[in-house]
Image (tube, rainbow, N blue to C red):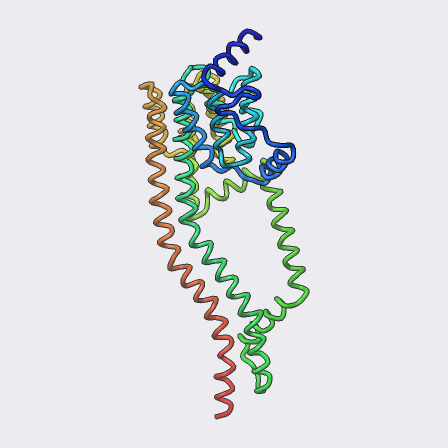
Length: 390
């Protein structure tokens, strides 16, 4: 072990890796106070998927060009703009220098490198194709980020419209309607029932009961989050989401796309079948899909095929099952899974666009109805008083 470590250090030094007080690419040691401040900032900073993609591509390019691993990690850590990722990469580099494998060093930071990432790096180390695997990791994360961005961008408009509608409704009832109430009372006469309902609602929203209502709502939301955090609650909630009238189909397509993309990437990277299924089960993002993958894992472990248990699960469409069966027969399972993932990525994009086009007019009518109801409630007494004066 000592001789192996000595060779590693000698090779790194020959490539220009910094040692101790050496110059060159070495980053000067920060003072105690500076390092402490960096660690404090790193705790509050978030590592984005974009940062991981950049790291993976840089690592793949430098390793593929023959740069030593220690020097690669040092250079990437030095130029990393994300302080938290820089701290993690520095620790990974130190562990590798001490004799640990790259996958083992990354595995000690699960908040940064999940099991999927570590499994692929380990397969790359075992097969001697670490640069190719890291490049595929970056492509996989970019594809996943692209799919997530499509869904988020499509749902941003409906969410913003609902929030604006609620804020406008609250502001009109809280600040505008009370002013009109004083004018109405000064004019005398009976107010219409619809206007009285809005005035009573406005009084409730400005009373201490509203604080109690908000507290109860917050407590209910907290209890719901705790319930969803349990395995049974998560399974029930995800099952309900899949059965939603319109959104359920989109959620199902996203789950299938993520499953095939992740599984295909792991298989192509050389990760064993059973290990790949274990990783996919943990990173599926849907408890119903995770349970289905668990059934597939049991079948494969007993010597069965992938397509047979998949055909029994309604979550997997017949086309996906047939493509997987063909991939098993031809020995090109990873290629078939990638094709399915590309197809469902496009399906998700088309479904989300169609859903957005339907939601837009509905939301316009909804927002107009909320604002219009308050306006009508304020002007009804005026018409009533005019009729009385006549």
